[in-house]
Length: 572
Image (tube, rainbow, N blue to C red; front, side):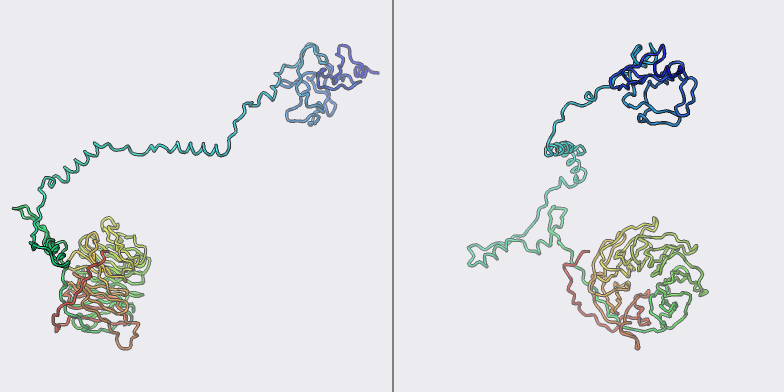
């Protein structure tokens, strides 16, 4: 038997006999012993280690030596015992032998006097357990504690202002008394002088006489209404009247039909009068603009150029220009000296329903179905402002030289007063409950009116303060007109015309317009109306394709007015 075999079975001199444990391993608890097995010869110190798969040897590795950081017999972390790795032989079969403490001279060690580094033993698992018991509470207790914490959090209002001391309150009152009421706080108390009537002596004979006697001691309503007039010499106050007397309406002669003009082939939608009061202009659904002589009613000129209904016309007082707008989204400037269009104003996104020329500035305002009011420069055709704010079709626009210089009425039931400098809304009037289709400016007073299906309202400029309602014309009002005599006229979609006294709101005349022969009854409607500059002629544009002119009845005789004012008029 060769020396290798002898060493394999009998051991080699100088080698340590294998103990009861695994060959080549120290005899430690937990190791099993395989009888008849000795330490392999390739584990003897000084012999090369054969390759674990091919059988070749690797220089520099000796049996029993350990790689730095790895102890003898330990396995690669993360690998199970007995698994193989390419290029390596089988590892130790028992995973519990991963790290074994070895000391020099331990039986079963490969090399006498050498051992692996010591490792601190693991702490028992029982020492890591938190042994203090957690006190258990019921759900009711936990909820109560949570509510208490929330209550404590919001118990004190840390953002509330400190209470004001009484002396500070008194100082504020004294300061206000001195600054605002110093001129009246030292005045003498007023002395009310009342005239008392003597009461007859002796007991009254009946209950009615007793009431009469008591009433004689009370001041009469006439005494109270003649109230409080201050006499500078005696400093006595007499009661002035508690309520201002209601104004009485002025008598106006009735109006009658003077002339009917036919010439348009469609609904007549708009009208305006020249400042010379010689002619007036109308626009129609037949896409034409016609100029008529005011005195005779004859046709003077027809202008064509629009491709849809002409909805608005305006004659400039300071220029020889006529402006027109229509449902074709166009705003045109006509030169009346050449009778042709010289400027177009582009910008509206939908039909243009009305326009107005500013009386003092070279600007033009147009409104339409795009819910905006556009302010144009006449000369440069530039859009100076686009006034937005309405939420529905803007039906009418008026301009004046004083504030507010632009007033618009819309189907969104609001009237807006505009600041022309800032291009923003100055005030919004929301009193109306129905669509507003027409506006009218008073020629002499600082006020204007608006017409809706619910009623006609009067407003005071510049802030739009409400004056009064004119109720009774229960129809869709399309037009308003007002002259210098205070005669307000409203025209409706059903052909009814009402005449009002502007000051008192008294409706002194109403009648139904008559359609021309051959027209349907459904064509009885008014779209626009306008007084001439003298206020003695009323021009109306109607749905039966005619233009009617009304005038006052010169033969009318003044009659007493049967006026019963509504004492409980609504103030909105």
